[in-house]
Image (cartoon, rainbow, N blue to C red; front, side, top):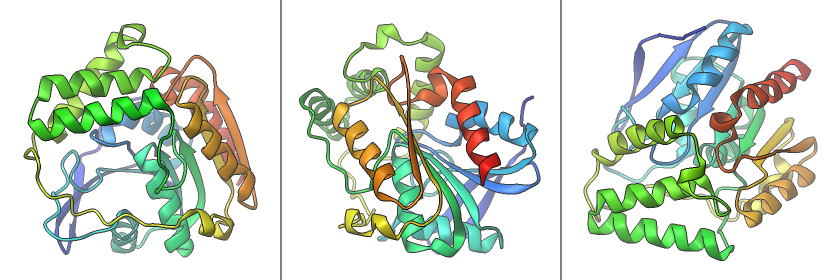
Length: 272
């Protein structure tokens, strides 16, 4: 099943934010990773709509077809604004990487809007990588991005897709092409060295015990070990958490093993 609903736009106080609204039923919101957009979840959107859910796949501010920031903002406030504008929720929030951090932040800041969260390749929003190989990828990403070396940055970005224990050559070329296309679209919206208006939440770990909705943590077994450890710690810390590792995948199990990832999502949703 292919979902072809048109993009809609929510007029926030700082520009329009894009989202795709598909299907009908209990609400699920999909939150993508950094530098890409809602298309990261094409495989998940189709499966969830077919299973009888309403699915909103949002473009985070500064990504995809959403406006860039021109003033300070927080991820959780943007998402809450969208759900309030739609008079929708509470929702299950499913986030990959940055999107998982957004899901956690929103569950802490706006618990009335959230009835469950799934974090994939994500922990709390103020998590800092300590694994040396991953730190090097992050350093190379910042260096190339700030210098305007787009081709160099793309090479680093795709190394990150592969994770610390593989190379981009180990990944399905179709996945790399898809990620490259989305990343280029987002990068084209920005200038090297421009101001980052995002205001991160701090001290989120002490607030993790406040999350009282069911939490599913899904990690690729080949992802950065420090991230896996922290994410699984989060699953143990919340009141109702569960952690799963998807073998032979890294930061994007939803792309590398979509059928297994979708089955985990649907099992989780049906149990709510």
